Length: 236
Image (cartoon, rainbow, N blue to C red; front, side, top):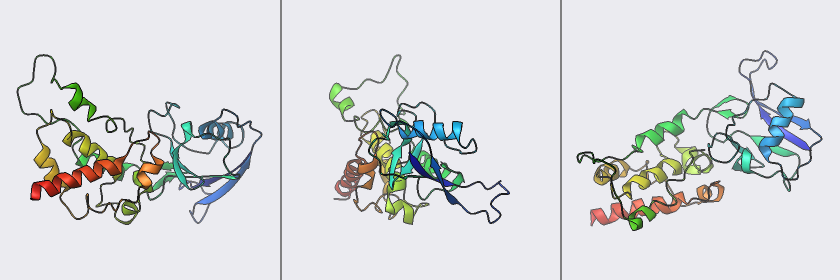
């Protein structure tokens, strides 16, 4: 199988101009039942131990191995090799700074995530056991809590490419709505006040790249639309 992989090593003296490059690899590898991550590990083990990438659970749960394969953001551990056009081109997630090879700097991504206060805010006295919720109210959170913060959706969004420091991005906005929709949370108005901004929320133009690339099948666009609806209703 043939691969073309993005390489960048700021500490290497081999690349005097300190510029990234695309490196070709060819490896004898049966793609049946294998994932992109399996191929990356095989290349690192047998051809080039300097190749760097993140991975952990290998089950599509941790979200650490997000990459761009043939122009599409994916999780390497759940993306099948079979059927991919060769040479398979693997790049880091777009618009984030590259630390080395396929490893990106997620600081901006997590900064936006922290900004939406992704935790329950409830000032009532803490109950003895737990804060109860009806099955119907709990069902409203399905499709929201499952986000694994891989960054595939946010880095596929042109609005994030243009305004990475101001637009929160689909992942952070999905998590914001997860707590706005939670009946146990008491900070709805505070959360909406924070989002009522020309950039943080309203730079979303409904392109739907986030929906197409989410490895968990979630719909950040729908959550963003519900936040906008709440803001409109509040203004009437």
